[in-house]
Image 1 (cartoon, rainbow, N blue to C red):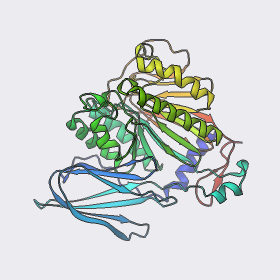
Image 2: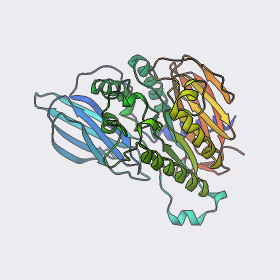
Image 3: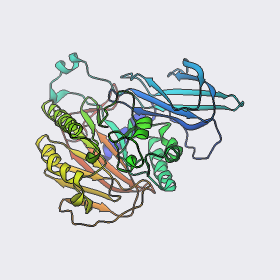
Image 4: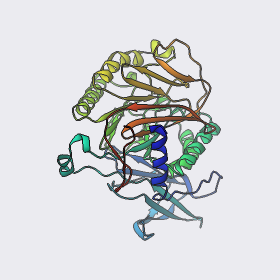
Length: 421
């Protein structure tokens, strides 16, 4: 059995018993939410839980613990504006459930449950000093990658079903969307449509998002688009739109590739932040994964003609190779493509709602590509980085294992497994 197969088998076996997940339900339902509750992860891995009501209502929000005991977090009246709640990260906690009871003024009663995956433990200084690198225990993190959800809700729903089917047995820590969340970012109606489909997985899996070019369309802001900020960022988040999500053994860097929307000072701030994070991770032997909307290597003519892309290629590729970046995730071109150059793997998601495209130039670094398909990619970061990509029928179309370290991986508090000899 390959190390990829062993990894998948152990994950399915170990986590299935520990995580209680909501049943699949894609039926339309009349309820009091205009936008169902969803969670995004901020740069401290805390949760920002957001929702919007159709009419003013009394809401009781409770957290349900492992013994099914309910702890009331709030009980108050809300109007129809978007609500943004802060919920602190609890390292080492089991899967968390938040139950919303809604009682509207018109008498409509609704119950929704928002689920959050198992929280990964942070290392203490004692643990860091106690073990040398060869004996260090890592806990694998699994996340999903989609992009360009944009226009076709029916295609987005197909990908949502693929995510949900996988999440019945696999504990995704978050879903990464690398931009073009909607087609016209300045229209609230398109965000409502996005969340109406995305609720099928966002009630179970928090979201992390990069800014796409379409997310700026008809927006009044030039740094972080106004509605993108409203729905997918938080108070005091970086105005330029970048941030990172750090775990014990890797860091996901979310870069704003819309450089033409940033001032020279803002671009400098972002470039300095990127190099500092990559350098610190390299010096600390921590894996760096970079995500953004625009790709730097692709089979699209756009990567040659666009000014932002040309600037990114000139600066980013040398940085990635210098600081041993393992994986770069992007979208924008609407065709699935995997490339490899000087130790760095580049993956572009197929559109999860946008109209598929075809190659327009030769990419000398292309290893695999698939035209005309929507994709969902599952990424497991542990001993190695294991990448599996599925089409909208849930069929595996591409996979690659990216070597990183030779460290053992922990799948529970008491279980370790050497995935690769």
